[in-house]
Each structure stands twice: as structure tokens, then as C-alpha cells.
Image (cartoon, rainbow, N blue to C red; front, side):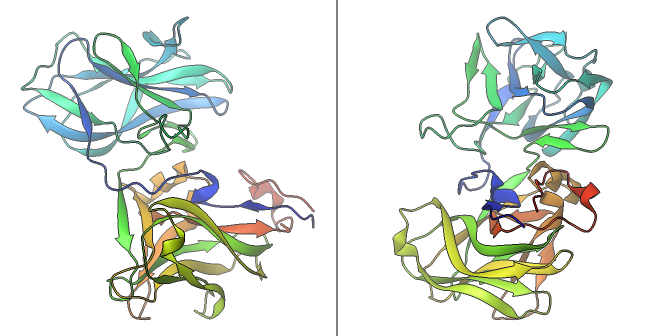
Length: 347
């Protein structure tokens, strides 16, 4: 084993404590478009583009959905990327949607391209259009925390959003790149809230020592306990009293406890639990259309939200993930090293 410090799960990305999605951009004339520029993460065949529909007004015409090349200024074109062909998409419902390309893209790692949604020959109008989500998911330009991929919209020219918004691409292998998230929720974890304890159920694909957690949180006043349980609901360790007054509203925090070994293949829970009425830390969770969409987050398929009230039975939800991850050191090579994937194993 080698002493490193890393983490596994959703907080490998610095996801902030934002609330529910609420803002859309209507594609309501012939020029309007939205796009997401990104660096292709791996070789393969990209078969789908996903995005979040906030509203469908009237009877919209069909739109193009595709992967396109960038021009010399870095703006999206309408020239298909990687030998692909765009799909025709006629909006009918809100929520997260996956659109299968008419012809998949042959993707090469380190290429730059864009996913784009734009009108076909039949122009939408103010009474018949689709509105695409433009809420931030990963920081903002103004805060200096915006991350690539970059979201854009076209009115009379391309303009950058103030940070990345929900979008994703899916490969023929079901690998997902991006943020295939349908909504977010901020939950109180006060002593008198329902539920009053929220976190993640997870299983590690290797043995490691856990020395704490990283979480996106918010709150003022009151005390909160951050806990680690085994599969039999035994409390293994905890941070017994985290005062929300330590925070300046919403923050990403790391807290530490005595080091404890987590065993490959065993189930664990990390949770936030209130100890004060009407105050304390809150939790943030991402909500997905299907359980498979959790794959957009690092190790997302081995994490799912867990919750309970007053120390009762746990409820696990595989279409949600709380933004909390274990902080690990001393990772051991797994019994099946071939499952490595996103992990860097050292021994």
C-alpha cells in the first residue's frame, strides 16, 4: 500500500451547493441555438446527446440535435463531427432527454467539438418552441470556479453562459460524459426535519483507509453530526459536532475523523444528521431520470442516496446521489484489478 490522499464518488468534482433547476432558454426563432463545447474524453462511438428540457410551448417544429465541429474562433458550426449525422428531435415533454444520433460519431480522445441543438428548416416562434435548461451545475465565471465543458447560446452571435449547464454524451458502451442530471434538491438535515439524516450508501471496489469526507453543504447555526456506518448499521466513526456557524452560507467542506479501514465489496453509509431543531447543515442531492444516468458522476453507479428519520429504517434511492464522498488514503489493489476503470490503484 502507498500513502496517498484522494476521494471516490461525486465530490471528486467540486460541485457547489446549488438548488433546484429553474431557468430555461427558449429556442424561438430560426437563429436560436444552444451548444456545449467539450474535449472528447476517450476513443469510441458516441451514439447519444442528452440535455434538460424545461418547457415545451405550443407545438414546436423539429430541431436538429448533433455533434459538430468548431470553427477557427472556437464557435460551434453545423458541420457534423466524427462522421456523425444529427438527429431530428420534435419536443413533446419536459425533463431529461437522450437523443440518439442518426449516425454515431467516431470519437477520438483530445478532439474538441460541441453538442448542439438548433432549428431545422421550419423555424420555431414565440408560440411554438422548446426551452433548454441553462442553470449552472459546476461553478461560475464570476466566482472563478467555472469548469470546461463550456455552455453557449446563440441569439445574434454566440455567447458563453456563466458556467457549465446540464448536458451529456453517451458512448455505445454506455459510458457517459457530462452531467446527465435532471434536477437538484437542497434538504434540511435538522433534528426535527423529515428525513433528519441523509447521505450515500456505497460499496468500494477496493480496500482503503477512510480519514474523512468531502461534501457540498449549506446552513447557519445549529450542530450536525457527520457519520460513517457499516452494513449492519454499526456507527464506525463520526465528526460528533459540526457547527453550521463555521460556514459562510454554502460551501464545499472537508472534515476528518480517526482513520478506519473500509473493506472491498462491503457496504457503508456516510451521512449528515441533525442534532438541533430548525438549524444545522443542509445536504445537496442530484436527481436523475434513470439510475443508469448516475454514471455521469465519478463512480456514480456505486453510490446512491440513503435517508431515514428518527433512527428508523433506511430508504435508498438509486435515482439520487447526495453530494458527499469519503476521503481515502492507503488504497489496496482490488481482488479484480481489471475493474479499475476510473481508479488509480497503487500498492
